[in-house]
Image 1 (cartoon, rainbow, N blue to C red):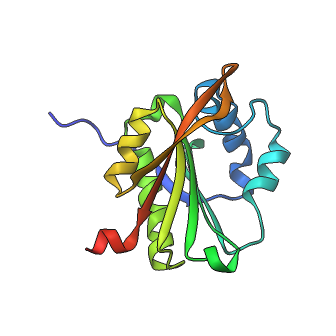
Image 2: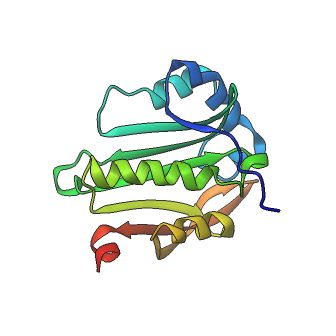
Length: 172
């Protein structure tokens, strides 16, 4: 018997999602896998995810009234890096491995490819987060390097992996 497909929708971040995104990133299991500080206020997330800038797209995955994931794509503003963008993502622990990350990433990469015309999309991921690395590889991201002692997590310096997806490589 096939596994039940979770029922959730992908939406553009709005004021209605502020409390849910705040709760998502204040969840300890999520906070430790992203570069956010714990215990951030709703106002911090409102400002962070609501820039009046078309180079920034923030999406959320919503199940019922609950935000279960978010993903952003930002096209860089520097002229010589305008063909590039960066991705950030977080998914609630109980929803990991259930397709939320895949659907969010597919949605932002569609925007990156077909609306922003980005050639290069890049991200960093903690070196020990093999599940996330697998997700990114599934979407064409390749490891570019190891950044040692990149961030503090659980009181220790930890490494991240730099990954990127180049559209010209996908077409070849």
